[in-house]
Image 1 (cartoon, rainbow, N blue to C red):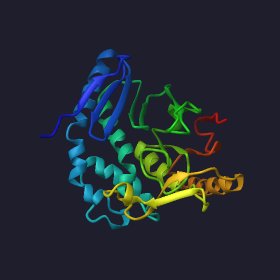
Image 2 (tube, one colour):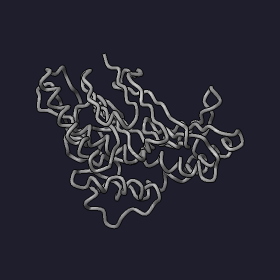
Image 3 (spheres, rainbow, N blue to C red):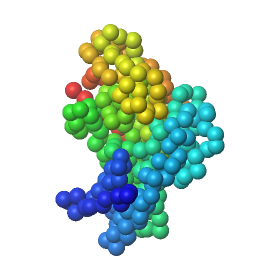
Image 4 (cartoon, helix red, strand yellow):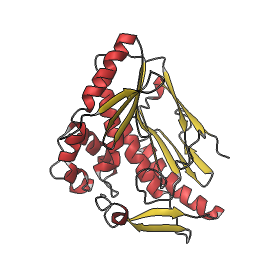
Length: 288
């Protein structure tokens, strides 16, 4: 029997925690009390059945975007497909956008017909945002997921049109073919930020004896990456190798920015950080 999604407020009494299998959401809304209460109820309702919808189309969602036939039909699956399609020149499957698309979908239902000043849905670090005029969103940025601390801030005003944040890297919860400790992307949706962060993080790379890789299926037999090599360890790199890897990622990020796919990105490798698009939000990295 399928277990119903779990919902509970965090100890602060303001943030709602929703959980269903691999989906783990932190939600917060700001506005009149009754509007917030109804918005939370709508978020809970939106999660019901969402995971099964994805499972039903999992075979398609694990297929390279160039081989999708037919297109997935579920609402979240469609968001995933839409987010990855602009990147079809690279190897990518809709699963690269799953966390961001879930956040986008829950937020869309949550704010429907509600008078909220601002709100966010955080799906394991991939964040969908809602902002009204005059509002802004500030979020901390983490460069090392294995030793999390606030290393910088992203200050996002309504006018920036940024509505999604995502972070990827070889130390994160998903596999990476690159060596970035973290790549944080700001885009117009969480799904768009999610896939972009994944691909930019893959591009932060260099051949070096300190980098250890293995076929993805050895870590997860069900992965959509198959026998492609993923990074499992990165030792100490020399300055030249760090710069080569970061510049490779920056090239991909700048191309995405020029195509209107992202607004800003921050790339970090072994305490070295490069930022593009600082003028869009206030993007401040504080890396020692």
